[in-house]
Image (cartoon, rainbow, N blue to C red):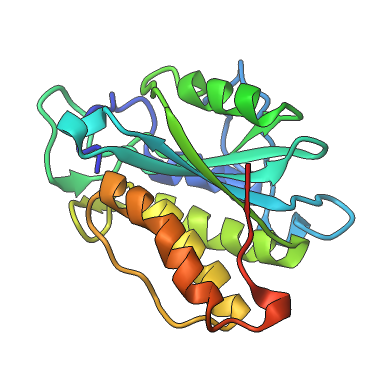
Length: 217
């Protein structure tokens, strides 16, 4: 949803290439892990939660959505699609400056969110709301793939391929793996974040007892 508040310091393709281990790290001051999806084995990483982040004051109150995947023990990975760049902002255009699997580090959730606010020096956030869901290692691996795909698009398209796509598609992947009905579709980050807890309660009415979605504080 955050069309255009990003300076074009690196293209998405250049940042996304880090997932394959090539290119130079534009975040030299950040603990950024270069990895491919094949590297996300049970031995190399063991994340067990997904955190949906919301900057509720962004975009004139419509909000900005992003995702943290991981845990305090093994570290967090941050995903955010950040708009089209420039001072004016556009609802459609080349996506620039996305955060794709930036490793935040082994921090408490509070400190991880604080780090996510400023991990990208060209586009700072003020995340003031989060929804934490307990997951498995295999689910997190799959959600990392979905989040990377959503954040790594070449074009930013408001209401169909924007910042909300990152957390929403990650949740849809989790929902599908649990056997729930879906997928969810939404256009406004703050609205999606507001209704998500109620949606989870509804899904849990139909999910098997061993597949229910558990929110964590």
